[in-house]
Image (tube, rainbow, N blue to C red; front, side, top):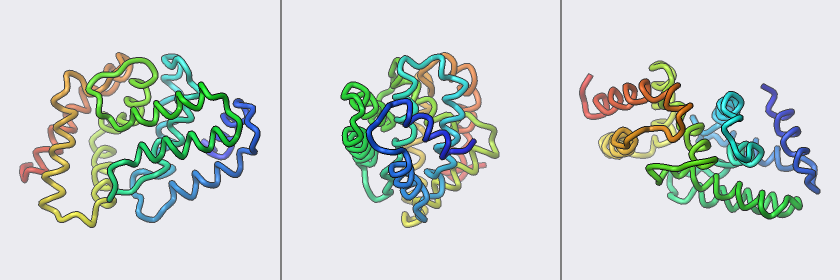
Length: 208
């Protein structure tokens, strides 16, 4: 996938006032910051690939795609409001470019959904959450690379503290009735996600 061409296509479909290159460059600069190991352009591309097979389930597929592009625009492991800041940056970029207010508002709300604070969500919110979390249900080697990259992003956290916090986060998903919100993602990823989460929690707790 050529991300530049992909962005060009989605941006031109909006008939926005600004050219796609300026915002694309700002996205590239954000996602290639050296402190990032998982939340990179590779993650954006992976999310877009997940959207490609699940697009028919989206009520507003353009807004879902824009939400995926912007959802980790701001990513600071020392902060707790990354999605709020990313949504604000997305809304500002879209408003400045003359994108319709209803589109801009939906994109902002979808980005906020990727905080994953809701145990259950429907519609496009559920879809973007599932796309973002689909890594949880991948094959074990891919999931383990994800976990290793998250640890790299939090390398400033002491090991014992990190393990405790990470267990809490992973267990939050495991304790939900379903990890994924939509039937399509449940069918594809739920079983493997639960196996990956359980195994990772055992390892973080010092097991095998």
